[in-house]
Amino acid sequence: MTEFLYRACPACNATDTTEEVHSPVRAETMTVDALRPYWSGLFSEKRFFTYHRCIGCGLLYNPAFFDGARLGELYSSMAPNMEMISNDAIAATQKGYFDAVQGKLDGGYLEIGPDTGHIVREAATRGAFDHFWLFEPNRAIHDTLRASAQGSLASLLTDMDDLSPVPDRSIGLAVMVHVLDHLLDPLATLRQIRAKLHPGGTLLIVTHNEKSLLRTLMGTRWPPFCLQHPELYNPATITALLGRAGYAGVRVERSRNYFPLPFLARQALWMIGLTPNRLLLPDVSLGLRLGNMLTLATVPAQAATGTEPWLEAAE
Image (tube, rainbow, N blue to C red; front, side, top):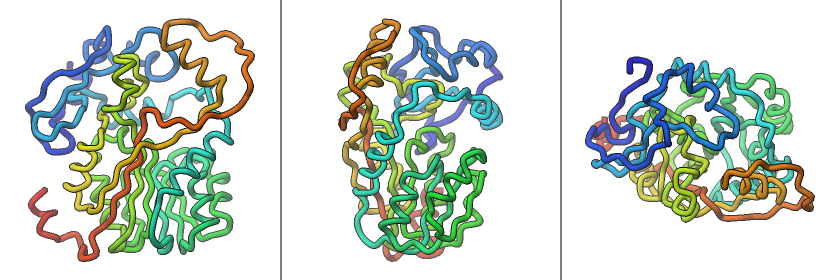
């Protein structure tokens, strides 16, 4: 169908794949208009593009997917999420992400998709960053996000694909939480970020783990199998992708996420096909290591201007 983009592997550009998982009705057999109701919200019967495994590098990705223009339109029309996790639970989860960062917390701070800025607040409180570069397309939360920087010099930008305003080799810590698996060209974004990090700088990424036990148990009902994820990672594939983008010292671990008990119960009922009604459960949060992973990587100390031999070989 001409409505969709057809692409090679976004990690290694190979075209040989094996089909791995598809929804009861494959998204690529539908029209864009027919898919709109499935873009957000809860449905007992899912729709997503068929995931294939790349023979070249092992990445799980959608060869057929929305193009960039269509994605922008869909994201701009996304309705607010009515199943919001409490602010305290989100703050506890993202504090844990920042706790995993080691080394100096100075230079510039860069985050793509910071939302209301929970990690920004941690960085402003506990680090010594001289400039916050925050790429957030939702202008409605910019005032809240700026306040999270707590008076530090902060630049808020809306184009998440263009990092050119950030000086090269100026960033000590870059952060992407549940952003990488939404990108059509993750390798290009990782290379852009690498050019902005100073030698020894750190990149922190949080993604879903498609090799997790939760995915095995839930099968096609695993929530990350959805229309918003053109690719999904596991420890091996994200490590390989970061190596191709020029990073070193990659470390991957399961991340701990905090969820209110009523939220977990509603999600569990929905996953088994039941309609969640009012649940009389205590509003306490549980820290669980479920289907997500946290990845840390650094820029080698010898990295310089973006003309390194490994980069030229990978182009």
